[in-house]
Image (spheres, rainbow over the protein chains, first blue to last red):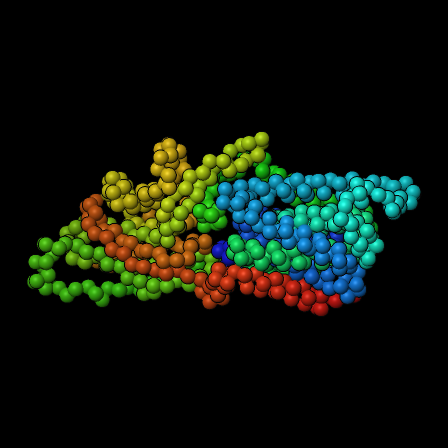
Length: 309
Length: 264
């Protein structure tokens, strides 16, 4: 059954789109991620113009993160002050990202840049996760208890100036890495259409040493507002948010997430992380394949501003 | 794929009355061609997946002898709104396929659908088509920078046509025009699923014994209907509020999802 996407200006199969949303929703429910890093490449594989895939992906991330965030807001498991600082950085990064996005689109290098960013980021994060989870699985098999994180351990980040106190996280840390992390993820959000949870969560845990109980809530808080900002700015400057496409994906995603969450409870943490790592690596490989294998046609057509015709 | 058939009914009523006066006028002012569309608007709805467009037309003052020999030919073209296009070519850099060279063209018809009575080579000499810029291969495509190497321009022009054909926007139907009677003909053209919206121009060319005689044209507006159009207009005219709305819709969906599938 076809559905006409008014902004992408093409008709797509609604069943395929719903299934895509549900599959990504299932995985995001299972692994507790937003799923933006899956939905955008999937849309690109499905021949949705990358500029629209990115902006629509950012819009879809809001829906999948919002229900999770509500739960955390209710329980109060978030650091509001830390989230706000991350958000401030995020808005700066996202704004910069939108400019870079428009520039790359005009010179015809946007698709390449999106693919490269995905390959590099997903490849790195996937490989790191894989190593970490395989080690964890091996350790539990050997019978040894997984090593506990040493708290109070200081690294270079704690020697930076402009310190600020974050009560909910029991942290006294420089605001520079917080703003920088927020900005970096905001930048990725506007270029890749991702929420950035897959970078934010490990960065908060390992770099800033934020207690795990507030990590997810704080990360979701930042993701929702940065994705919202990205969606609005993409809509204003590039008119690339396809609301019909986003809505179909959201409906599939929200439903799929519930089943994913149930399936996720049956698996152990390190197994779950190993699976997620495999998935992330598979997406990276698929995108790398398209970059390195000679395309069917060497020519492509775009409008004068780099947008689709 | 559901093919919506948009029928443009005949507009033949305008055929002039026959008479002695006409016979004289025929000498001075020979054959003429007319086409008519019953509708000048085609709506693209949510389930649009391409359509067939039928255009009816008539040859006026046709010479009965030539008619009997079947030496009248008609070519009907539906041309989409012209837009500037950038053609890019990928090359291998460090193992990756990257867009390097590009060429910008001005006023490229966004779509170009042709129907003919017979194969092009059987209707007229190739030079006639060149003069008329008729047919996807003869369309004059104007490069933005005419000082570029002609070989490069030719290569990118060919690539542009090839891409347009591959995406179904430039299409050809040999035999798509059929004479229903001595004067009346019907042209069947395809509208691709990705047909661009805007004002399209239908043009009909009449050939007699391989010689171009007359051309006529009519306009057809292709537009997004109701809901699609509302969204498209909202997104373009009130881009900021559209963004706010998209965010609101996402939050609402997320919130509803939580209520419907409550887990905690």
